[in-house]
Image 1 (cartoon, one colour):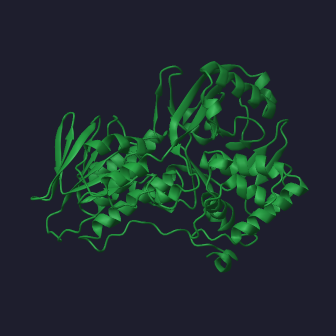
Image 2 (cartoon, rainbow, N blue to C red; image 1 turned 90 degrees about the vertical axis):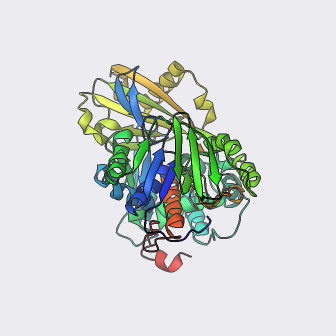
Image 3 (cartoon, rainbow, N blue to C red; image 1 turned 30 degrees about the vertical axis):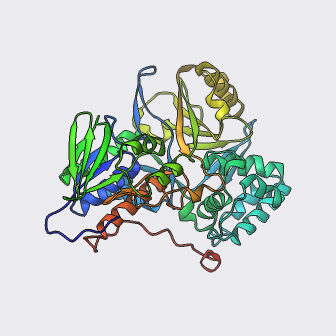
Length: 474
């Protein structure tokens, strides 16, 4: 970003995009005293993390189940800023269920990191002795892994090289890690898998705790709208940006929308990569504009599907579970996680990630398959009455993280003057997550503030490794 002189009057900044990255940048800058204009093409904030009234079931549902972890320091910082941090349900245990119903639990013990998860892993029925030895070998290798060294190796190749058993691959690497990164094993760069392992299972028990919203996502992010309005920011919803122009003489951006124009000294483009592709031809010529376009073209989507089921009775008291050896991967018990719904039976959300095949199924096919598989884990399903069901396909849920993706993730600085980029796909060091999005927003806010308000810094530091990891971590 081109530096500007410090001014006594607050500058105006336009943020294009009301997803997590745009909201985190806008809220940070509003707190810093900027006059913020947040532009969103939809009628609500949240982007891919939103909810809506589904007409087919007459229920408010999320477009996809979103989770966070204790290591998501910037997302948690954003939640604290907008006052919604208490609307997160936290848990430190993960229940794995095999077809037939046998359960295993993963979670922390009193041992120091990175050994804190070892007792429950060793006692887990889901893994054979050979599987556990293979996982121990892999974890030891990850302790020696230097993420600063570029790697073109895929996770599948790395697993073969590190002698992982079929059980370890299917029940841990494919289900837990590939599912978290939402891609096939051969389409994941090893550094991203290593980061997930270290953050969730090694650095500390606090880093690995799992959080889920206890309210619909749109209600959660309504806190951002309230915060911005309280700070005097302008929200332009249902506003589609068509182009942007830069006036060098007056150092000012003009943002053209279908309903009018906005002007500001600064511009932050916080769009998903596919929306950035559409906007790029309508941005001013810039020395590195074509290079950015080439980078954006390298990104690829991966879908996430969710099946929502309402039953006439309780199916399980578990808040969530990992379902092994089947197409459906995760179960979220919304009746437990969101008790305000007061549904007399059970409302379950089943999530299938990292599979383009499932995303091609017709509605009834997907629901029937989900019901059939769910009954293998919870036999009471066979006696329960299904009251209603919905299938949600988020085709553009995440971007892929294949080997080489770091070389095309752009920095926060944009090719144009007084302009910055944000979005989970920019260079944050994180995969396609809400944490990456929030982090990118804070990086953009910091870069803008650095030119005129040195006291404001919004990027939250990572959680420090604990226990023995303080000596091991690089």
